[in-house]
Image (cartoon, rainbow over all chains, first blue to last red; front, side, top):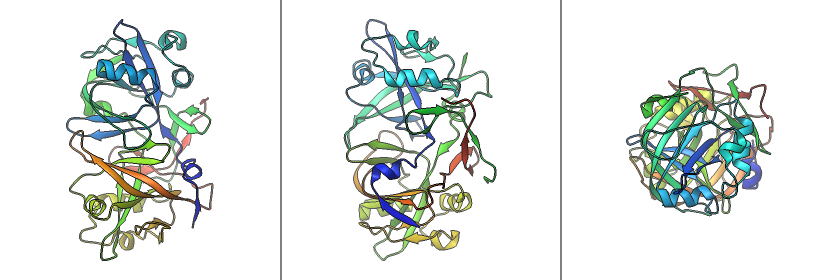
Length: 174
Length: 174
């Protein structure tokens, strides 16, 4: 039975929620990374992602300037690094260095890959829409990479308060 | 270390992935329901969802006609029902009846709530964009409901091949 409540209260039932890291690189060569929970696949062919990125974020500024970025699936071992990326601004610090996030060069874009991520997707900006209070950044995947360790699993926001961790399938699925 | 691969291969590392049910109602009163995996929150105020819904889907036709729908988080006990909703078309059958999915009346829209869902969000259509090969349906939440059983958990696609089930936080998160 359903009980009417506020959207905010009902949305607390959304967890675990996927989280990704979005990397960018400024014109002067400095890499940046942020955490994004509002993310979904947006197209199969070409493969695309849609990302909700606040227009006050430094990442948003860099994406609009450089027209490219990388979407990485952080591994479940990257809870600390992802929380750091999600709670500091790259305007005033090098989050890769301070959080100890390893970078690797991408194939086609200047933004770096996340070395320890489960997978990385190099993207070029297609368009930005704004149906509500947040810009939705649409990126086309132009190159993809996966961690050579195929046992590595994704990180999730498992509960409110930025609780991050891995998840396992429960018994009884089908 | 990252190894370059195809986007399709790298995307196989995405699981578990969230899944929602989207309900609609035709002009002649018949309810319909489909499963959608390409979904994310798109705005805080007003709360909104973005959904990737194939334009060949009956749900897409009903949303463009009626301008409203409900986004429901199926519970982990609804794997069979969700798989049914995701693998049949409502053009030729009543998926609520055939899958045994219970419905409840919504407060503000004609599309029904999913009685056994973790939460339901009544939405009105805001806009549809098409950055790639799939329409992205943006819906504004106008009313919300949550299941009175607060221990009920969401359903996920836990592996390829439409493997559906619940997930639990793994040890070691932070």
